[in-house]
Length: 111
DNA sequence: ACCGTGACGTGTC
DNA sequence: TGACACGCCACGG
Image (cartoon, rainbow, N blue to C red):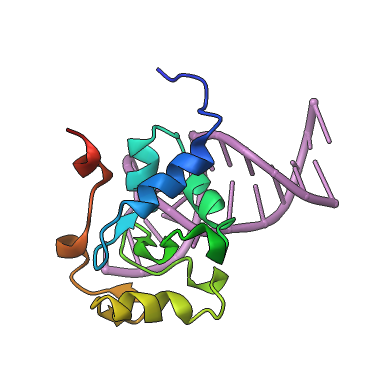
């Protein structure tokens, strides 16, 4: 089903990301599934365009293993880990500890 | 239009 | 586990 690709998917990715509670994290794939984008890469692509003024907590999005795969795109690169730690999340070797317990699913937005 | 490039993920070996 | 191939899809050259 599929419907044509939502032409506003970038805004949707921002909206979902802004819904992630502080101290929690989700994945590129979870957001892609929720928005039926068909490709998790599109989530990373969209988040790559985030600017500070957008107020989008992109640091709360990690890959399926809980790794900070997007860290190199922050300024400075250490900012992603620092922001997570500021929210109480422990990062070890570029990976979120207790990833499974801290995972937040966008489906929680549904009624 | 073709091709390479990714903040990705699943399946297989 | 871990490496790798492959599918995915928007974008730029």
